[in-house]
Image (cartoon, rainbow, N blue to C red):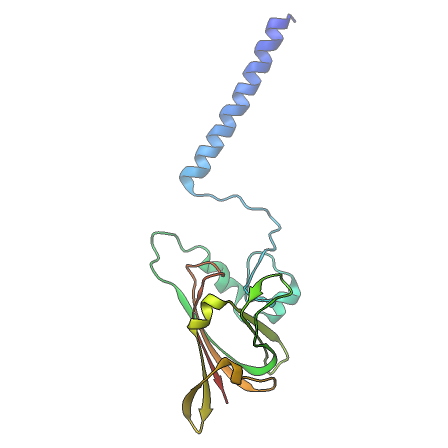
Amino acid sequence: MSFIKLFKVIFIALFLVTCVELGYYLYIQTTGVSISPAKTQRIVSYSSDVLACSENPPQEIVDKQALSESALRSLRYLKKGLISSSTTTSELRGKIVQIEKKEGISSLGTQYERLLKISGSNGHVNTFELKAEKMNNVEVYQDKEGKKEKINFDNLYINDKIVIDITHDLLKSTNDWLIKMIIIKS
């Protein structure tokens, strides 16, 4: 085979491969199909304990996770442009096992203004790292004989029994999703 014929064959093969790749790219763009790695184990959280996971979380996380994995997974399929609001409100009950009343850096390397770690009746722990700009969204109360009296965060101590009502905006990233946190000390 002459050099020119070999060059034409190579050129045609590369041209066909390029056309197939371009067609595949256009197909993905028009159908909305997403390509993601098969073994995604990204953990979404603003604290050192897991609040929500994406695909294939480790079993020890699933065992501690309070929310249904299938419910969390189904929320991912809501389409942009159709949903205008999505919030979740959760109530947590437990005992304070660690509290930091001054700014610091978490084990994940993020800076916080206040840190609150609570343990539930089963011993599972959730950590809340509250950034300075979100402290305006945090209210703290003392329950005195059924009446709520507003107190400061500094009036919380280790071993205090508390209830946390927390509201998140699911349309925002975990860095900015806290709408309101109400802490009630009993």
